[in-house]
Every structure is written in C-alpha cells, then in structure tokens.
Image (tube, rainbow, N blue to C red; front, side, top):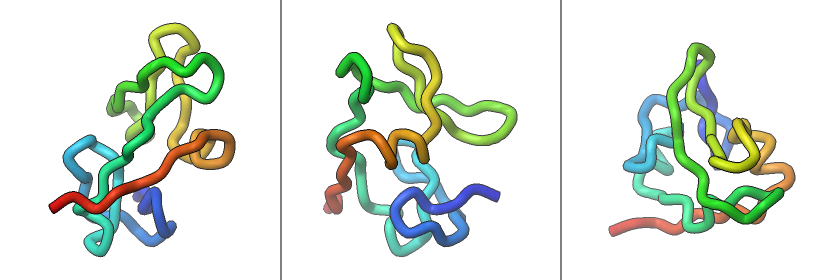
Length: 78
C-alpha cells in the first residue's frame, strides 16, 4: 500500500493530480511539480509498484526522491 505524500500515513485516495494522499490531504494539490535536475514539467504515471513521476528529459523520479531533493509544496484546493 502506498503512503500519503504529505504525512506518511496510509493513502486511501488519490488527489486530482494522481498523487497518493490520505483523506485529510485529499484536497491538496502540488503547486510545483518540476524536475529537480532540469526544471522540466513532471507527469504522474502509474506503474507496477505504484505511482511515479516522469520527466521527458531525465526519466523516472519517485515521489519520495522528489520530496527529499525537490522544492515541492502543496496548496489546499477549494
């Protein structure tokens, strides 16, 4: 089972961008989904082991790697 990207609890739902979230954070959206290496846009894709991010120039990046290295923040929608 995947973990909530914001708090680490078990995710039960995905937000509108396809990022795994818990019910408390389901209305939050990532405001800065940029590649930490080249600054390009990231796409959310589903794979065998869960959701991940893909940069057109740099390749695949895991959510948790982006959280450690990237400058990602979330805003509450609605």
